[in-house]
Length: 384
Image (cartoon, rainbow, N blue to C red):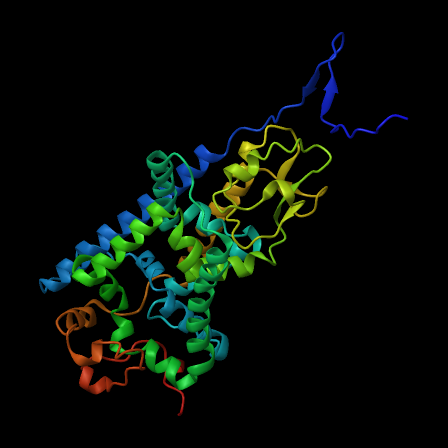
């Protein structure tokens, strides 16, 4: 009695020989394109940072800046964006203190819902740095170190605990009055300048904390992204509801495990028919590594709407471009803080009301601030 042997559909018998031939994958590797996109976003971020540095420098000299403040710098204000987003949900008012921060947050959340963790794998500069630290790790140690599961799983929960802390503080602890008080406080008005000073006037403690994180990311690839980044946790949670997933066709898979070896998130891709993991950042490295045609791909279902990696790249970049253009056209890209007010702020950055006060919502008197309140009349503080 013969034994039935499963032969994948893409393995065909060569005529005139007993050899079997695998129908090889015919797609072009997407990693060069991903690197172009990553470095493109990095260039934009660095250019924004340089422009903002010059703009603040001119303010500090008491001059009216010759440059326009780049709103994209607000992408580094996720907490302010989260607070403003909740205020927008509760009141219908998108404030004009840091409107671009909310716009960018919404775009990033949209990528999580529709494109998995594409922001992490294609846009985030820290993700790019993490990728190259991982490459250096392999060069130094000739292998990719992975923590044992007993450590890996508890550590992965840390980023979700950090995310819970921020979400709980904003959505549970802060009432409408607190939200408004924070948004229009001196601290939040200059949060972008404070963030710049975080890098340009870095304390020794901050420096060594950052160096420690870099060192840990060198010893344990993607340490920050995998264990500590609350943004990654948020997008990972949203990716569960994303319709797009990496699919594996078990009928054509030859079980070479190259996909699993290529995955920077240590996902056992060769065992999954559909990759649901919250660690998948849609980098397509597993797809590039697969040697067999029509075996690994991104799609809504196994047989419907397969999304080519290049199309994914265009959609991701298009979301950021379209979202930014829409914000500009609707008047919610540039803030409404006048230059004269900024001149006042930069001269008083070290005053007590410009500090966060260990998480307490700063209260202040706009008359004492000697600047007019910012925003439309409908943005007056709600009654406490």
